[in-house]
Length: 130
Image (cartoon, rainbow, N blue to C red; front, side):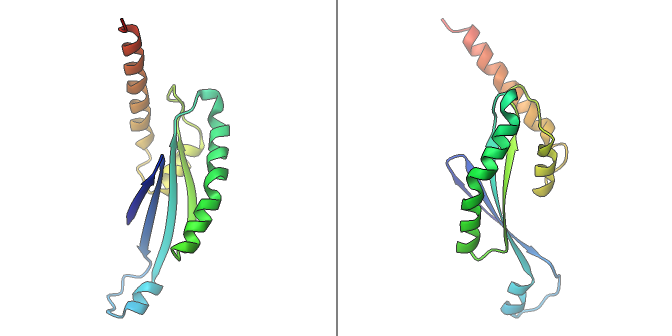
């Protein structure tokens, strides 16, 4: 597994073994692997922009995902937007995105906690500004 990050997009390159046979032949080992690319984009928009942000992110990076898939000789490429609103509201698609990444289903709780604590810090700094 390799992770590349450019600006705010992470590219996760995963090679999964479909077969657990212990062959020493490299050609057989390469044929038994499923090569996947996940482009992960994290966004924290306002609550009223959730659905628009999800579709924008998928459309924006789909061509890049296809190009990377062809360049790196991968089997599949997927764009996975992880979107949570600035008030910690989560869209229905977040659970599907977490499932596609094989993350724990309760990961959204940590995401909500991070957003709320970040917003609290911003408000506290604003109110203490002199």
